Length: 311
Ligand SMILES: Cc1cc2nc3c(=O)[nH]c(=O)nc-3n(C[C@H](O)[C@H](O)[C@H](O)COP(=O)(O)OP(=O)(O)OC[C@H]3O[C@@H](n4cnc5c(N)ncnc54)[C@H](O)[C@@H]3O)c2cc1C
Image (tube, rainbow, N blue to C red; front, side, top):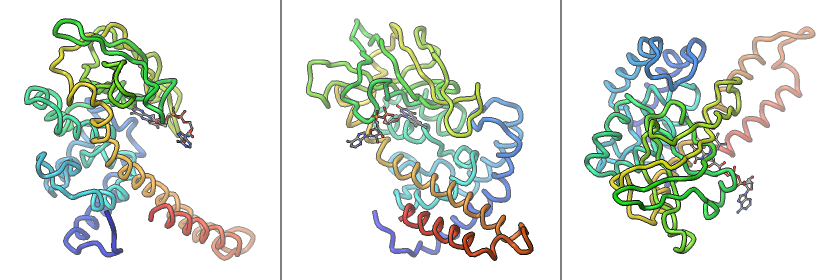
């Protein structure tokens, strides 16, 4: 992936449309609506659904999937530039049908799901009708997934899952979770785990608490600590070959790294723009903030840091 600092003109037209649309129509939602994941909330239906339709009409809906999977095949570079715009609003990803963790989960389902699994979970996910969660990290192991202990034991036609997961984002809104569990404890470190679809209402799936990060207010955290106790799912819910959970995980984590980072760049840019607006509109001690040398220096430093992070 490389960027020669010039975006092709046809795609730039779409980016310009997206930037204008997000600024004028999507950002205001940040001020009036609560969570961006309350798909059945009447206000969400009234305010967000029409905007989603506008995105569909522009052909930009759920554009993270490759053409072989029914998407537009933009590739990571174009998606990165689009996500930079979407990062400026809490609602933009949902309005464009490419919100985490649903994007990565859709990629896994598209690559590894059976026709039945795709019809049941992937299609409604792409339609924005339901939400999903990715349940991989555990309290004792995040960056080192070889420490995962959550087990899925074969029992007849089922797998039975026992263990705990940590930071399962959006589990509280999700209809299903994609769970990475150890199925083959005797195998090599990277051949032990498998990936399974688990409907959230399966007996034994318990959210212990929803952890809030950043600006999430108390009681509205979206990152779940989940306990799985004798959770039984059919073997057909296996995604990809047994023992290949690490490889399957890369299907989602690769692109996600770029999208997440570019949305963060978008968030930072918005904060930067707000800072600049303040500097040229606020007068203190006889002059605009922007006239003060140290303020100019701080803004210049922020811009440099932002550009370095972006590249
Ligand atoms: C907002 C948020 C949302 C998340 N959503 C999800 C989700 O939906 N599903 C999910 O499964 N997980 C999710 N996670 C969990 C995330 O994947 C883990 O936080 C991540 O893998 C790191 O694991 P850890 O927090 O346990 O840190 P640890 O693994 O304990 O790492 C601790 C520190 O060590 C550093 N470190 C680790 N390895 C190295 C190394 N080799 N060299 C040098 N330093 C190192 C890390 O940078 C970190 O600072 C989310 C996390 C956050 C913060």
